[in-house]
Every structure is written in C-alpha cells, then in structure tokens.
Image: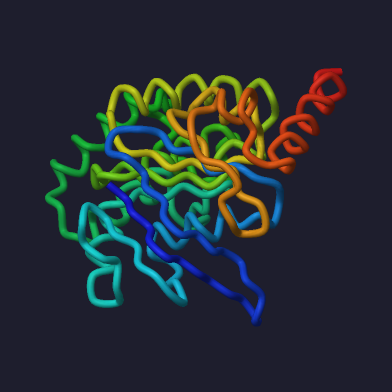
Length: 247
C-alpha cells in the first residue's frame, strides 16, 4: 500500500533519513521504532506527504506522492499525532467533521459517519459538543482518531499517539486501537519508542537508528535474531528499564 524507494531527507545539511526500500503492506500494522532522533517521525511525515524527500519516491497504492498528487492522496491517509493536534476553537464534532464539511458532504452523511465513529472509538456521544479543553487526554486522542478516520482512508498513520497519556488510559486506548485496527483491516503505520507497545501492535517492525533501518521483520527477530549490536543494546536498555518503570 505504501512503498518508499531510495529515500533521503536532510535538514540543515544533516542527514535525517536514508532508507533504501521500505513497504507498508496492505491490511497490516507496521511499527516504526527507535530512540528519540532516530528519524521515525520524519519518515512518517514523508509517508503522509507532509515532507518531500530530497531524493527517492513515496508511492501510495502505486501512485507517486508528488506536488501535483499530494493533496488528493493525503485524503486517503489518516494522520494522528501525539497531542492530538485538535483545533481549540472547534468542538469535538467540529474537529472530526472539518474535512468532510470542507468537501461539502451532505449533513446527513456527516452525522451518520460521526455516529459510526463514536461507536467504533467508544467516545461518549455527549462529548461531541465539548471543546478540546473540556475533554480528558484520552478523549482528545479518540477525537483525533475519529478525525483521521472520517474520510475512511486507506492508510492510518499514527505518531506516538499514546505517548503523553498516563498508564491506565494508555492501556485502555491500546486495547481499543488494536481492536479498531483489526475491525477495519486498514494499512497502519505506527511510530513508537516503546518496545512493549511495538510487540502489542506489530505485524512487522522497523528499527531505526540515525535515520537508517537497522533491522526489519517480525517482532521476535529483534529479540532472538538481532542483526546489529545496536539492536541488542536497544532491546536490553528497554528490558533493564522495565522494572524501574513499573515501580
């Protein structure tokens, strides 16, 4: 569904991403994992079309993402960021339906789609008329997810969507997200720095370091068949940190 070939991206002369070939397969969940500054969020923005590569190509279902096609193709990609990115002056209803109304969907179609998404995400219906400041962190992320799904996109891209939430809310949302991914059967690309979250969601995992892919495969490959000393260091660091985090 998504294919990146020969991608490079630099900022101020410094290489941020350099990827030879990477695919997100139709109907599966691909996890981009790595430490802060590894290039995973930049790579996701290249997939979404918010950034243009210096070299190489990004293709969505065979069509290259270019200045002429980006606007249309972006409507086929839902995008969720860590803090939700909601417009504070719009209600939850206004945030979710913004693009649909921009595209002049009939009111009945908008309301029917809202009802479907409220049920899918388990968002309280009476919260639709509240503003983001009146919602909890978990509710804001559900609104952001509904907004990303409003146009029924082919691909859903999420950039550490649960990173700012407390553990209990995060656990509930993890369960709901996995259920939603399986229910919808969409192509999903999710960015995280958390190894346990990667294991929970992934069909395939891509571990990034300094903008390059260090290892790609199923989750067990990272644990049992590390391809590079960095992979072992990354895994061990998270395992060693786990007891302390639980305490």
